[in-house]
Length: 126
Image 1 (spheres, rainbow, N blue to C red):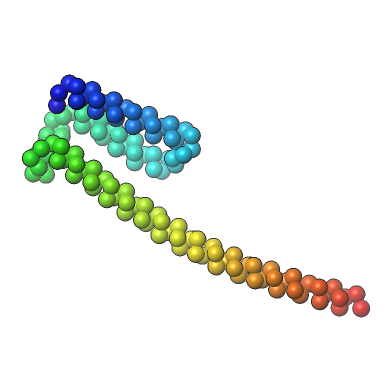
Image 2 (cartoon, rainbow, N blue to C red):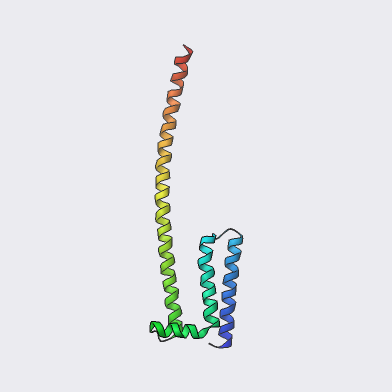
């Protein structure tokens, strides 16, 4: 890796780290997701500084180029994050359905109570 590439990669890692911290500070990103992104940024930072580790990983998985290794890990990262978000969406969909059903039941109960209330007032005034 040339010195220019290394400097650029380090700037990108530090910028990503800073952006994530800024988003957490502004409450636009929850802490539970920030850890994943901060870990990713730190991992890239380590791979840039310790290029031999990237070479070793490339040989370990049988890839030809280190860029292939980075691409593979990036792809796996996106597969896992997509799976995680799919699980979250499924859980939230179930919660929304349950809440809507509960709201409908409570609304019906409320309407029945309102209908019964005038009858009780009329009977008690007699």
